[in-house]
Image 1 (spheres, protein in one colour):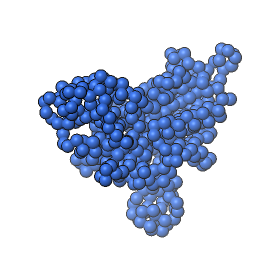
Image 2 (image 1 turned 120 degrees about the horizontal axis):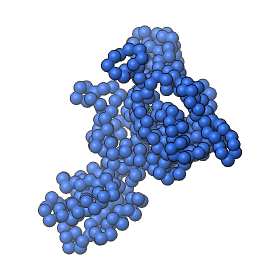
Image 3 (image 1 turned 90 degrees about the vertical axis):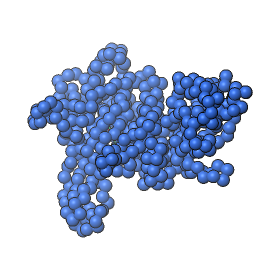
Image 4 (image 1 turned 90 degrees about the horizontal axis):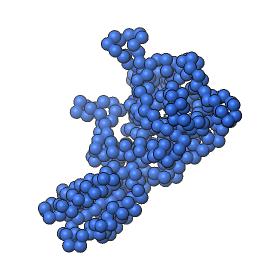
Length: 436
Ligand code: GAP
């Protein structure tokens, strides 16, 4: 049974060092989070799993890493300066602010319940503005990107020339984006600073619909392959009034969060909107000449856009389980081995010097390939519980028999079964059990 409420995950994350409230010693910085020793490893695993599926295992996608700060021209062309806003209303009674599109009845304040106290909606632009150089003022404004996508569009020609790709092909990027969200919340689900994993997939215009279908199915499957049960996922096409200013059709991969279905990832048909806009605003041609047909065209774009932090929240919620082992309650994170912060924990049964050389040698050997934890504190039972709770798929126990039989015990997180494995076969056994 996955986590029933968000508090279970929030508490585990704090207790075990996945996620801390940001600037906590100063009372916290609202809706900002810092990722601790385990959380930072897991974030990296989410990114790596995405890059592996979207770039490494394909020959039609390349990766870039573009700047976070951008000049106004980019966001004028993209439409973000004019259109990237949420409708904001204030309650004149309790002074709280809300997104009008998140309120069911606009005649009643959702916070204090007062009637007819909400102001008219005004468009609130979500981009963070700052100033480059020592003088604050007009001409020095720059923006923190609200999506990584524009980095792919403005580099379209650079990548086309240097990578020698041709449509259909994609440009992928993983990196931070910033939005001055009116109502951040639900832990790491919606924050003002977050990380995206986006692909802009450029196709001949006539192939747009088929690639849209392809990417909707492929992206759903990615979450399933990484351990989320199919009944916790669904694909929901956007209604016309939900579409972004650039989209001719979008579907959300939704996840069954404890508070209901919500967006995990969006897959949008951005048509040739962005390339046309940047071509017009920059005066540079952003098209493709197909030598085989003699045709010149502006490619259409299909964009699967996911969030690293939001995906991490979903993976944690889906993996959380409380079960009973030998009459004793335990909490276990049944994370996919690729997502688990540590793949293996090395647990010498005692701190005695004699066990150390073998345990340290295993740590060094497996550490060549995997993130491995070494833990020789507390009782073995407590150490197993801790590893279960942080999702470590395998524990290796070094005991006094190991000195004689040159073997160790491998314990499986999910079944809790233990098997004796010769040291000479350890790497092989671990690789088979983890699947990589
Ligand atoms: N380039 C298209 C784009 O940015 P989006 O649906 O606004 O589309 C894509 O964002 C994904 O980025 C979302 O599905 C979500 O996973 C993540 N995301 C967006 N805003 C976020 C926020 N404020 N906090 C955390 N993740 C966010």
